[in-house]
Figure 1 (tube, rainbow, N blue to C red):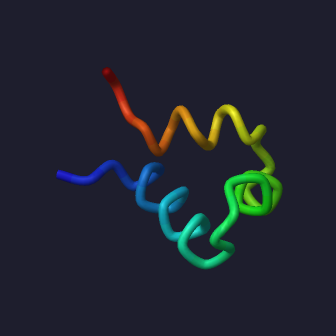
Figure 2 (cartoon, rainbow, N blue to C red; figure 1 turned 120 degrees about the vertical axis):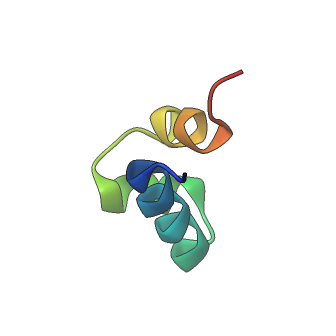
Length: 41
């Protein structure tokens, strides 16, 4: 099952096509955005 938070981050990334812009839209840091999209190791 897809994590709803991950899906929200992914949709923001697709819409903006930019990690920094998506992170700003979601009120998180670009590093947090990158980590969330990458998922657990």
